[in-house]
Amino acid sequence: MKRRDSNPDDKKPKRSAYDKALGLLARREHSRRELGLKLRQGGYEGDEAGAALDRLGEQQYQDDDRFAEVLVRSRVGQGYGPQRLRAELKSHGLSDARIRECLDQAEVDWNASAATQLHRRYGTKPPADPSERAKRAQFLLRRGFSAATVRSVTHAEVDDAADGDD
Image 1: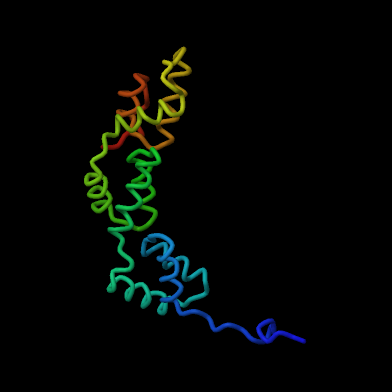
Image 2: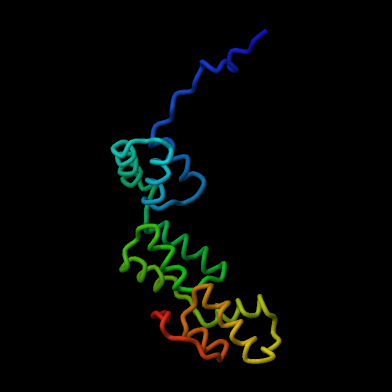
């Protein structure tokens, strides 16, 4: 006997863009840009996706400000620096002014955060030689800390070309 629900001719109706986006938001916060991209990848037309995003915004289910705050809090907890956060927030379509505001509101001591990352990675033993010090500095730079912060924490000479304001 054949089960009715296993028939390949019985297709489920496609969920609306709104329902799909709401399901994504139920799992975690998403930026408007990220949700739009996921909807387009899911085969939803631009008009339908845009209307769904507008409706979600009006209902305050999707909010780029809230997304940014959650992302900053999460990444700071993971030990990332301000330059990494700026780049990630920028990739989600947030304005420079909003990014600056989010980082200021986070009130993070970037030097303490960088020092914590060094201790997690390398322990409390001081670097044995200048090459070890440079290795530690590169680690912090890759995590998104500014050259001034890295210099302060490691006492290593670091190129200021990548330095931004913390």
